[in-house]
Image 1 (tube, helix red, strand yellow):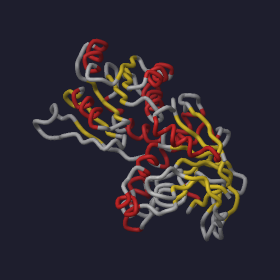
Image 2 (cartoon, rainbow, N blue to C red; image 1 turned 135 degrees about the horizontal axis):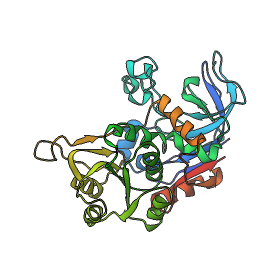
Image 3 (cartoon, helix red, strand yellow; image 1 turned 120 degrees about the vertical axis):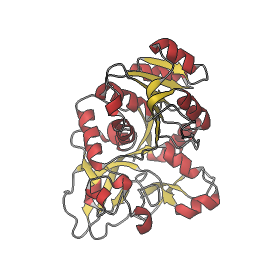
Length: 346
């Protein structure tokens, strides 16, 4: 079968012929219908050789956003049937710790100890014609949802949903939420904020195209992400501070901007993998201002995200690529020329 693999550190990924995987006991094989390309993949492929080899194998099939049709069941696998249309819940855990028992396998207490990694971020993922999933509990029914149009919700929907839920108690009438980075995750975050809260939603980005997308999906205001953004926000809402900032870039300049927007009891939610850092402490921020760095989301939350998609409250702006052209999807992602999310359809 064909698979998009990261083969050599520092080189672009390659479409290669690899053996068809067989599901072992308790495992499930999927015929992949859609796989999403994500900045996390680009981040991993940007690591220097020493760092990469410390945590990831070579070659490795990319793709931690996946959807497919159940194709074959390993011995003892139950809970799904051949022919089911499913999506893959990516942050796999041990299934037994207190976090996993609550469906929060993204916060599994033993994953690192046991060597458990997400597909495409530690072992072979979904950018292939077929993939093997370790346990049926990692499969969420898609039902009548289109795989290509919704596979990105397994990360680009789940991650902002989980991040926003942690601030819902503050985002009532009169509140303001700022989304920094209106691309793949950010444009979904804007829709979630409009659906789940009564906050005024402001988008910031360096791309005019993405600012236009932000307005299309519901942002009340959309400004260039420059040092002048704070003044423009103050002019728009009448105050220089906001209730919550969701930074989907998390580079040094965006975190500096987000920090400058904080007021008393503001939330700064660091979601992106841009490598920036933000200070905390009694003199480093307004009183009771928080900094959170959430990771992905829980299995129940993914089901809730799909429910929002079925009801028409959220959608993902997608551009599709054939598996043969999957490397181009990552090139476009790296160059920042994707308007929303890239999806590969084998």
